[in-house]
Amino acid sequence: MLLDFVRAHTVLAPVPFVPEINLRQAEEPIALWEATEAGGAEQPPPFWAFAWAGGQALARHILDEPELVAGRSVLDLATGSGLVAVAAAKAGARPVVANDIDPLSLAAAAANAADNRVEVATVEADLLDTDDRYGVILAGDVFYSREMAGRVLPYLRRAAGRGSLVLVGDPGRAYLPEGLVRRATYDVPVTEALESCTIRRTSVWQVVS
Image (cartoon, rainbow, N blue to C red; front, side, top):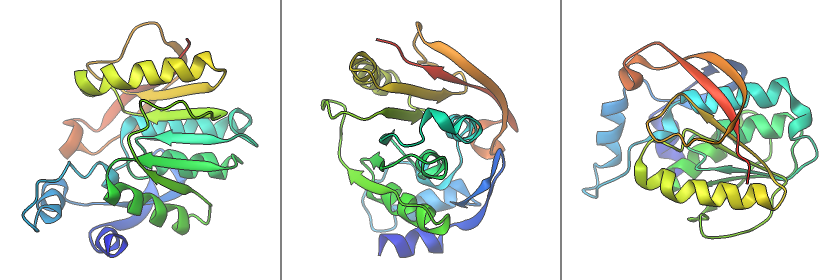
């Protein structure tokens, strides 16, 4: 049912900055959000239906430098559409886990993985108080609120302290923390209706413990 909803409200199209990947993307953000709430229950914004700048930059970086993830276990935290997870799988990561708390997000990630013929496992859970080990942890656009940043950063720093490679993609969100190591910067095409611009300068950062 969730998979049917995702497919009915999105169009499969190449990602602007990562054209090697086709992604199920919504054409009308507000209309889609209203559709998710048609059952009467309040729903989170449909983050899963768009290629956000941080995810695009992270996916581009991984595909350009596949040695970062090839042969390593990868967690795509707060996966949204699954774009970064798909990129990691294309770059040779094994296994790849896409995580989110929104079941629609995981349905979208599963659909996008299938459409791109890669294998991605999905986990619906809040993992921020856990300490499972992954070779690489990837997170695109997670510093958009004070609350989210306050929970995500300690998790990412703990993972880095255990030896994981931890990379985040961020287009200068308000709560991007200090002390990160910049690995790359890109000018990423974005949806004007969401970002109020057509290009976002976006960096890939490494989190250190």
